[in-house]
Length: 64
Image (cartoon, rainbow, N blue to C red; front, top):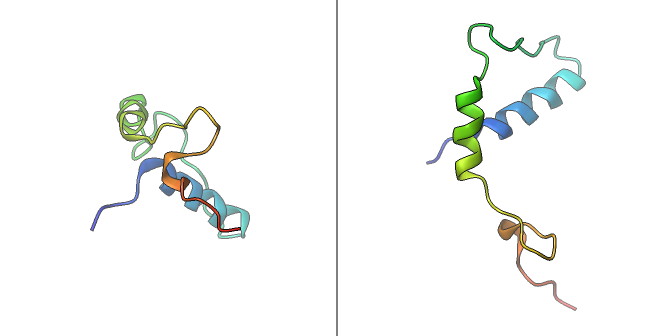
C-alpha cells in the first residue's frame, strides 16, 4: 500500500487545524518541517494537468 504524499498530508493537517484540533503548522526550517528538497521531490511525482484543464486522475467520461 502506497503512502500518502506530502501535499495530501499538508491538506489533511490544514483540515484538522480548521476543525479545531489545536495543532499548528511547523515553521520552515524547524525540525520535522518539509524542506525545499521534499517539495522538489513531490513535484517530480505530481500528476500533470491536461490541456483541457482536467487532472489526468479524473479523466473518466461522465454518463449522460
